[in-house]
View 1 (tube, each protein chain N blue to C red):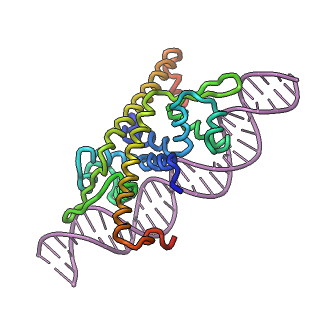
View 2: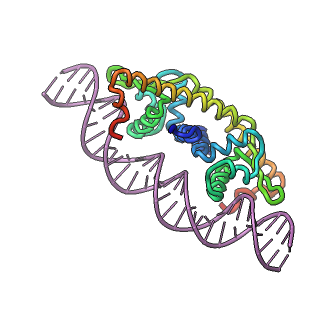
Length: 118
Length: 118
DNA sequence: TCGCAAATTGAAGATTTCTTCAATTGCTGC
DNA sequence: GCAGCAATTGAAGAAATCTTCAATTTGCGA
C-alpha cells in the first residue's frame, strides 16, 4: 500500500516551502558548501539552520558529510536547478500578471485608490 | 520594499503543498474543468474543495469563471505542467535513491529487520 | 417570489509546522 | 583527559494551516 503519488508530491512541495530551505538549495546549486558558509550567507541562527537542514536531509534532497570539524552539504541530484527554474518562471508570470492587473486598475481609478485606508 | 524573492518562492511552494491542490492542478492540465467535475474526481467534501480552490485562486495560479449555474476553473499559465514534470523527476529520483538504500540494507540484514516492531 | 442546487465564505477547534533554548555529540589541539 | 568550536538534537510554546460546520450568495426554473 504505497503512499498515493499526489500525497508524496504535496509532501515534497511542503518540504520546499520555507525561505531558509529555499536559500540553502539555491546556494548548493553552485556546489557543495559547509554549514559555516551557509550560515554566513543566510540570516538565521545556527540551530534553526540545523533544523531546516534536517528537514532537507530527511527528504533526501541533500546529503551531508563530515570533513574534519565541519559538515559539508550537497544536492543529492542534478534536477533541482530545473525545478527551481520552472518555479521562477511561473512566479515571474504570476507577479507580472498581478502587476498587469494592478496597472489596469490604476488606469481606471484615482491614484491612491489601492492604498487608501490601510 | 518588495517581498524577498526567496520568501515569495517559499510561499509559492507552500501553496502547492496540499494533496487536493496538487490533484486540482493535475486535472486542470487537460483543460478547464467545472467544480462539479473536480468534485467527482477528487475525494473531498465540497466545502473543503472550495477552500483549497480559494488558496489556488489567491495565489493566481488558477482563474475561475462563472458559466450559468456552474463555476469553471482554468490554469492561469502554461508553465505548470513543466513544474509538475520537474517535481516528478526529482521525486522519482528520490524514491529510487531511497529504494536503493533500502536494498543495500536488506542485503546486509535479516529480512524482517526493517519492518519488525511496527 | 419561492425553492433548489452549485459554490463560496467565515469561524472554531484540531493538527502541523516554526522558532528558540538548553543539552548533547563529534572533532581538534593542548 | 579536557577545553573549545562546529553542528545537531529534543522539547516546549508560538504561529500557521487544515478540516468541518453552519450560513450565505448566485443563478435557474416552477
